[in-house]
Figure (cartoon, rainbow, N blue to C red):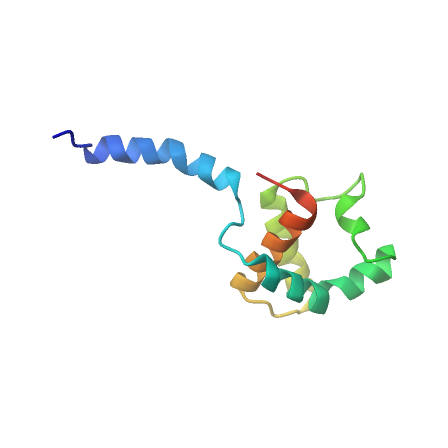
Length: 106
């Protein structure tokens, strides 16, 4: 019987884990919940600043968010600055929605 030793398993997971995270950085979030949060907490400000449906903030050429980490940080920053009182899981849902709708980070 072939068995994998603990060090070999740890080494294997060390190589696989970053790839899995990179494939779906917000896969634990619920995009539907994130969409509802976006409509309630974010869209009004973005529409006021960019017009239309506010989506231009995410798609403009000079956007600040260039990777999944920056997206998560921007959500946290907006949450804190605007006093939206979102829980970390709400931020994760929001990131899942925004990533699926606009960014497509892997």
